[in-house]
Length: 387
Ligand SMILES: *Cc1c(COP(=O)(O)O)cnc(C)c1O
Image (cartoon, rainbow, N blue to C red; front, top):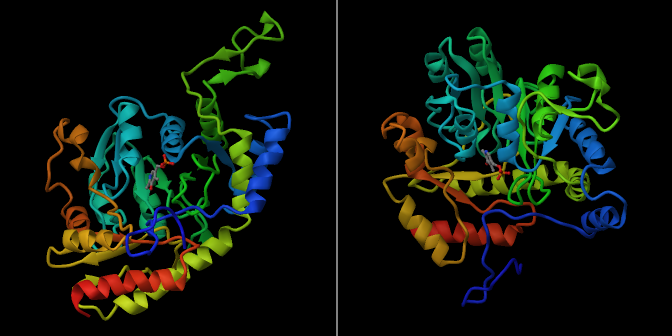
């Protein structure tokens, strides 16, 4: 398939992730473009309602990115300077960066060596009376140990935040992602499980957290007269009681989101098929480990995280890139970024996460990948190992 530029041998370059956009999606977007609302209008309300159908009815606040969703979620949790946030380091830096931007001290707790998800015992050892949030990540789309992590958070008087940028559509013990943690965040970046180009959402069952999230999304503006300090100013009057930002997701993009959501189950199914095809073919290859699944998890696979043993990850990365196969590495431990290093975080802090990172290689995974594409990736991996 012709994703982008062709390789010299005539094979298309395969990206590691890619959106699926149909004529129906395009029609949904152009309909909004022709209408009265470009930004906050009926498509926002509709997309939020549509999202709730995938989170067991738990309401959503849509925002401009997964990063904005995290920033809003920490604002909803009233994170203040000096508070602590216990977080998984096996994630995109935004999970931790957005807490740091609120002045929190991020306390990284190690991951399970096989799933890459926040380890319950490590989280339990990391919480203190200053912990306000425990931030888990559903790495690669596989839900974290959400019930046990919620117990750890709640027993410390903290909230569980689930960064579900990878896992919308997944379930844990039969319950949908979004219906379990106190706060769940999604990303709708093009490589994720559904897209609005840029976009994200915060999901919470708590009316207080929801109201705070809605406030932070829109400058903290208070328009409800009953809540205003000087309600007699006149009909134009609005007040800011707490600082917020403009994180409003436009109607145009919400229309794309609602249209994409109709195919979420289809996307999840195709991603699972590709994941299973990789697993079946690679289980017997010496020198790699395939990703495990926990009993009770029904992942919405966003990544296929292969583990490459004996220090050969970089060589396999270069080999596959040379074949036009867009492999990726997810993720450098968040505290290895110089911004955290400059704050005093040192290598060696979370040995499981570091070992995981040293071995991890994400193979291409997106719904439009054909079995022929998958076999081309597999040939590339087998060729490298002489298998
Ligand atoms: C993509 C991603 C984010 C950030 O989402 P954006 O929409 O790109 O801002 C946060 N956390 C994780 C785990 C992600 O994969």
